[in-house]
Amino acid sequence: MIRLFHVSDVHFGAEDPAALAWFAERVAVEKPQAVIMTGDLTMRATKREFQAGGAWLQSLGVPVTLEVGNHDIPYYWDPFRRLFAPYQRYAAVERMIERPLDLPGVTVVPLNTTARAQWRWNWSKGRVSPGSLRRALALIEEAPRDHLILVAAHHPLIEGGTRGTAKTRRGDVALTRLAAAGAHAVLTGHVHDPFDVPVERNGRIIRMVGAGTLSKRTRKTPPTFNELRIEDGRFETLVRQFGEAVPQVITEDSRAG
Image 1: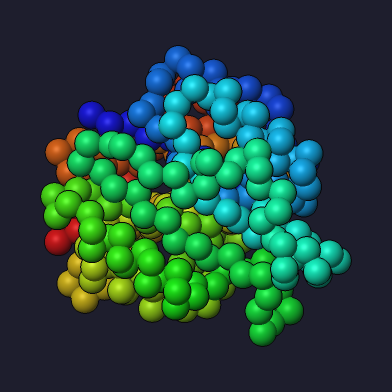
Image 2: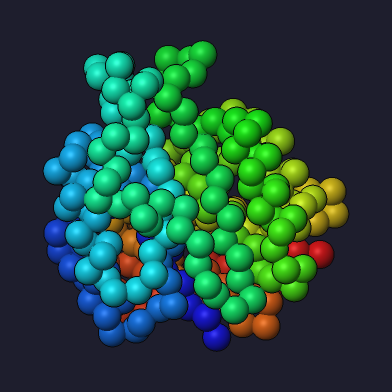
């Protein structure tokens, strides 16, 4: 069995030190094969926050792959840096961003859903560009046919019934095309509450899996992360809640048909 820890929205700068210490302890004790971090490592994309977040991820001692969230690019009040040098402060985590993971029977495919600018007021919401989707589909095409394919993004492609919203533009189209290409699940964050929702697209089931937050910016649920248990081409999602000894299984499902 392969065990992956799916964590999101740690928000260094507004982090919860106790929750971070608990997560690091769980990694050290349980030794998952890898950690998938689906964005918002930082709060304001400062160099200090990236250094602190990078040091924390490196201290876990297991392979980590990191997606970029909307909080990981400079805010609106720094428009030059946001538009022309949004990745300048990533040095501390550069090697982890979209890092390939060597996992038997599993392929993790990155999908960028953040945007430097959009034709709407709220730039924190998601957007799937044609180029990002094209790159993800190409990686799925290259994956072995018998692999479980997990797409890692920051924003949910469609809403998962949580209080927070992503309102991801072209997300529904992307979800349909990812399902048709053979993806089995899309792992995301952003809304700060966990979910696992099976969605039917043209006769195939693709699962939308969202992780909570390990920051102080909680919403409906306390600090949480997801544990994915993968065996024989199937996986189940368990929500690991800070302070609870027994994880909660929120979906136990099969591969897409």
